[in-house]
Amino acid sequence: MKEKKIFISDLLDHVGEEITELFFVRGMLNSKNRQGTAWTSVGIADRTGMATAKIWSEFFCDQNMELEEQVCEIFGKVDIYNGVPGISITSMKKAESFQQKDFAKSLDESVCKALKGSLSEWINQIKNPRYRALLERVFAKNADKMLGVPASVNSHHVYNGGCMEHTLEVVCMADRLAEHYYQMEEYPVNRDLLLTAALLHDVGCTTCYEPFPLSKKTVRGSLIGVALESSLFCVSYNSLLSQESRVSDTTELTHCILASHDESVGGVKPAMLEAIILHDANMSSIHANGYSTCFRKDEIWHPEMQKNRTWIYSSLHETVLYRKEVEKDV
Image (cartoon, rainbow, N blue to C red):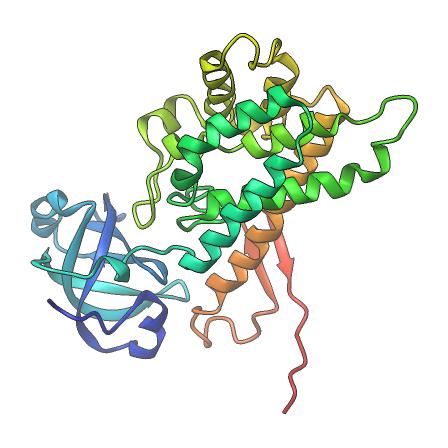
């Protein structure tokens, strides 16, 4: 079995070198430049991240499209594209053997165990027996699945287990945000409703996203989306419970789940205090993790392209982000 020695995170150390290495081919896109010359953009990945490779031969473009979503042995030269390291591919073929651990970007087993423990603790805090019964039914089938998929395709928590990690971040943030309002006379926040919706708000990721390194939307992800899929989970699993155990009216719960997501991805405008709090908690987790992801990607930028990596444009935030330099002990 071939041992993988060069990972995506190592490419910057091999600029100008010809390498032969295994990478997962996420997808290919044929294009032509202004002169009409054909070339192919190849998305590659391993457990350390993702990068873009190029094929500059028209014949080679059509010949290798069947290698999409396969682990391939790639031969080529490491170059810099727009400040980011990539590979100019000379040849590629399907790998005869490889180690799965080299290509699955996942949380450590100990972290997954801790997350499952935290999930159980949050469920046990739900006092409403009908909400708790629904959560127990849903997560009995889907907790392990949430530890096997990312929370998004390319913007935040993009690793297997990211769905569960993000969900628990949102639950914790929502609970802390709502502390001030639990005893409010005018409209006390329903903690059981808030936490139940937070726990269920992204369960649809399990059927909408493929695991890393593929990290793409499934057919349901493209046609239905995580927001609606998560609300469908709520309704369908509730219908499986006995008449005595099921939530009698899922309208408020479904609204909170849908409202936690932005309208641009199938969500709705929050119309309840619980929904407002949950929406803000979800966006906080998304944007905070997305911020750190931007600068983690920035760390492999070529130093001559961006010597001062204090600023970087983020498509997720649609603005230029600033990172304060951290003083290190010498």
